[in-house]
Length: 306
Image (tube, rainbow, N blue to C red; front, side, top):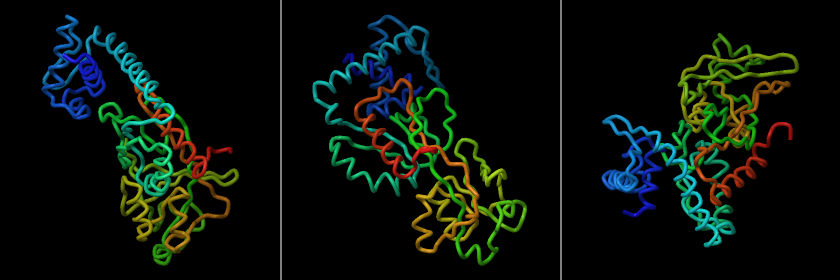
């Protein structure tokens, strides 16, 4: 038995809650992962995991052992890092998940400069607006807009996206230009709905002007759960939409979208967060990525009040 492989397999099964998922993230067969854990239990003469046909649960002894294993694996990575001078030049594969519009318009254009600085970091980048199971999917961190509601995650607030209200000229020609946000409520006007991945519902938008505040839900013809599709629906004239400025500016410049309610109305900014599991070691490569994201957000989405 390779003790390192066995420890890594055990930790990954605990984190993923499944031998199958653990095997996938370790690029091993399920049989190999199962045998490694069984061999580890035999060597320790302790039951670490309780297995049923539907789930895997850690035993009390296994929970105590798991905490020590996580620290040990982190220390081993630190030792490798110091010997290979990886703190000066981080290396290895980094699994992250980011929103699709942010990837397309901000991260990817800036990625060549990051790669030039850290040529040995390899990205596996999930690009989506879906909720990600960081542990089960073996993701190092996610970058998300909106509040992070999972109290088990370590969260860093890295920016605030300024939002505006827009509509395509074709929509305004057909429906007329609304002069006040209340005109989007229970009238002939339509919005483009954005489905929250956690609830599957369209969330209202709060708008403010001096001491006036209004919550706009609106009625929609189409609602989507992807930022790029949301933008495309608005450009196609399917309704009024709320967008971060970075998503709207190129389309406004080309006349494909028109800003609305510019007479003092403002939307609450959308907070941007980096989140990662508390048992995920903040390696040099992850720290480099987070610092890079913070720098990008300072340019494109500075924290409110700055």
